[in-house]
Each structure stands twice: as C-alpha cells, then as structure tokens.
Image 1 (cartoon, rainbow, N blue to C red):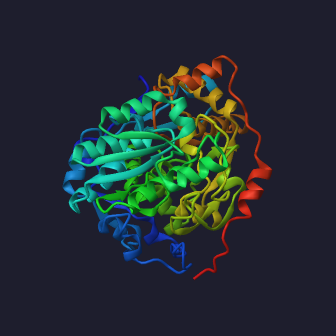
Image 2 (cartoon, helix red, strand yellow):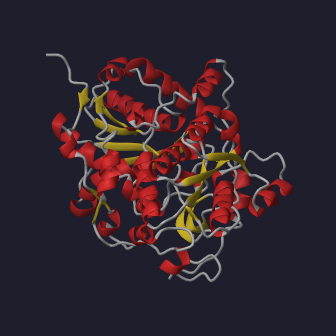
Length: 455
C-alpha cells in the first residue's frame, strides 16, 4: 500500500470558534500595565488603538469565542490547510520517527498571518474604522493585513523594518498590489522614527521601532486604529484554527504527537498550533512536549528576562510581562525578519516560565541547512522563519534515530519562502553569516527594562 502523505478536512470541519487558552491556565495571566502610571490598564486606555471587540477578546476569560460568519466565509477561501506526513524526509534522515507538518503557506498570502488579519480587519470595519496603521518585519504580516484590508474596504499604512524592506522587495510589492502604502522604518514621518534616525542614521531597524511608529500614527489620527500581527492574546487566539484542524488531522493519521514544534518571534504561529494540544497537558497532565525554536541572534526565550517591558522602543505601548531582551535591543540583520523581536507573547512566556514549553535557539546557517534538506525531500521551500521549526524537527528525528525509538513529531510550517529566495541565493554563495549572540548589546538593553511591581 502506498504511504499516505496528505490529510485534508472538508469545509464542515473548519473551526467555528477560537480557543482561548487563558481559560485553562493554572495561574491567571499577568495584566498589562499602563506605560505612564504603571497601573493595570482598562478598556478605555486601549480604545484609541483597538476596536472594542478586540479589547474584549484580549481580556476574555471564556474558553471558546465564536468566529463571526464573515470571517468564517473568508477563512473558507483557503482553510482547512493540509497536514502532511514527511515520508521522504524521514527516509532521507533514516529515522524511525514519524514527521508531520501543518502547512500554512497554502493561504493566498503564503503564511498563517491571514488567520488574524481577516479577523482584525473585520472588527475594525464593524466599528467604522477607515484606516489602519501597522508594522511588519519580513512582510508576511503586512501582506496578510493588506489583503484583509482590501477585502473589508480599509486603508492601510505599513511601517516595514528597514532591513527587510531592502532584503525583500517583493513583499513590499505584494502589499502594494493589495493597496497598502509601505515605507521603511525608521522613517522621517513620525517623531519616534526621527528620534531613532538622529541617534543612529545607519540603523537596520527593528520590530520594536516599527511598532512605535505605527502606534504613534494610529494615536495621532481619529480615523485610524492600530493592528498587531503577533504577541497579544487575541492574535494568538485567532491562530488556534491551526491547531484545532491539526488535532482532527492527526486523528485521521491515527497518531498523537509526542512533540509539537514551531518557530517563535512574537509567538503567534506556534501558539496557533500548540495551544489546542496544550490544553490536554494543562487539564490532564498529558506528556506531550512543546518546543519553541528561535534564532541564536535574537534568543528571547533562551536568554531573555521574564519581566514587564514595553512592546516598542519608544515606550508607547502598554507594559506586558514577557520574556524580553530589552525594548531598545536591535537584533542583527538575519533573514528571518519575522523573528527579530525583542519580546515574546505573554502567554507563551508564562507557559515557558512554568515549564510547559521548552526553548531552543539555532544559528542562521544551520537553519538554512535544514531548510534545503527539507525542500529537497518534500518539495516545499520554507520561509526563513519556518525553517527554524524545520531545523528543530530534523534534530528531534535524528535524536530518535540515535536512540532507536519511534517518535511522532508535529511542526508548523507557517509560510513558504518563495519571496525569500534572495536569502537562499546568499546561502548557496556562502555569504550567510552566523551572528554571534550579542551579549553586551542585550545586557545594555536589559538595564532599561522598567521596574514594575506585580499587581
């Protein structure tokens, strides 16, 4: 019998609710704090940035949140996404492990980011918002939100991290196709951007800087709201359609994962896959392992401090308790632009601090070694961000081989790399750098993490 490679769901099996893991945590999440007063923030504090429906989801204690019908209809254009068994990769590795991957690159914009972009654009449209400002790292979030804003008739301004703006011109072009205005960050159009350029004219930019610019933009205009592609609770919740589908597909395959893997920058794609599976560990003590993988040059979980910090460089966002490298830290210019963020989602940070999530970090060249090995076996070129998950999955499979044990591995292939081929070109030319862990830079940035008393 030929092996089964692909597991698909029909339209009736697309999730109709998002899963909110906050309802199942053993300890309640730490509340966001006001950047000025240091006190817990309320809905009115967030109203200049987010629609009230989003604010309600951010603090909701409910386990299940209904997905509005217009969002379900939009999801149905590309969901459910496939789950694959990587038989050819298993053979290439000579491992007894069974490797599965959930492929989010099947969306129209090529990544998982559409799952929350559609929801956020819908809720903004429902409240009459005419314009949104946002940031983007590698451009996957900006592309997804541009598509979603076009769908719901909203104008979009995107502040794209400078190094990615230069490395990934076709991501900018994709955003332009969907009607978004895109500028490199830091820019001279905001006070935050001008201050950064004055202090460091040659900066490569960072997500923390781009967030400051987008937040300033939104706060300065009555017709504009801010939209974020990762980190916050509501964003992670919107992504749980991934894991809910994967649970059904693993049942079709007749297996349960021993380990669930995903790359982490802000944490949304990994939370989307992992949180539905994590529920059994939190409620029943299930033995599934959860592994989050990140770059050695931006090692938020593996080397960061778990503390209250700003989500942006200028200190305009609420303070959230998270694993952080310091909000002023600017990571080296690696190609995984979506993982160049100084902080980690508070929910993932909490689960890591409580021992439910393991974290590993990989250097850039080893990541591309794994990406090329995966592409040659499976026929999909992964994005640099997703390639960190590929690297960890391969390492897990080789460990199983050395131990002579079967192991069921599930990872999230959160986006394709067809607009990242410049990075692969540099890899084959031997031009990719393994940036050293920036110990001194991080130490300096951590000195500026504010001291906030726990409420």
